[in-house]
Image 1 (tube, rainbow, N blue to C red):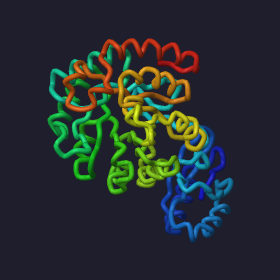
Image 2 (cartoon, rainbow, N blue to C red; image 1 turned 30 degrees about the horizontal axis):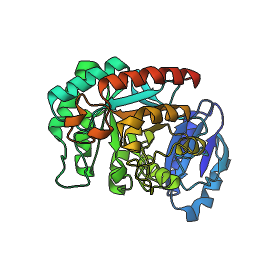
Image 3 (cartoon, one colour; image 1 turned 135 degrees about the vertical axis):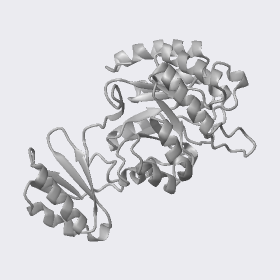
Image 4 (cartoon, rainbow, N blue to C red; image 1 turned 90 degrees about the vertical axis):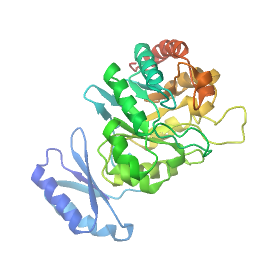
Length: 339
């Protein structure tokens, strides 16, 4: 259920409503709107009618049932788009497009520092790089782990770029959160519910990638797992789905961007690198994603992709990335966005 507070309702009124929601056995989630606050009451669907009594409390305008299964991610709870702060000067979901760029994996100090300087110079606003890498084969490079996190922190100190890196299990989530500005949940872990709950308890923005066989509703239900634990700072990422097509690694579902924008208030970015698996197509799909309404992109950039430990074939060289950024500036202007 959604408890809509009256415009200008006092804090004490809101606190009394929160107290009553807890007494009835539900978990309250406060969403601050531009003119009024909304409180989502989440819990057992079978007894939700008892919440209707809250409508008579002081400061409450009305109580409305949430029809969508993804309660907190739904526009029924929050109609205006969410803007997710990353740093004091950077947020995802506003007028400014956010470009996250860097190598798939942190391989060495020289590699990550060179990558960080190159993407910063081209105009990227977030550095990406994997310290922990879940791989299909147990024999593939699994990442430098904590040493990789330390190198990412060093690159952040050098360039000022905030860092997004992947969390692969609940046991290392706290460690990653010590170093990262954004916690990434990869496609393989998008329905790892224990991990989703864990990052939901951490006070860091979460970049949630769509699973390769996920429907839109399943994707939003994964976001709901994070949000139901108290973390509302979720960024959705369309990264391609598995289809019968073999010409590309995955099929980048551009239609998911406007669909998600219609169904949820959460910001949406696209990953054209995993979405195609081939650097030849990354620029075209990046431009198309921005034109489709994406709030940003996450792009793999490597100074020497031929020798990359992972995902070299889909990584852009710094010069090609800089050229793409110039194209994206023109498209962003046409979409009334800043880059």
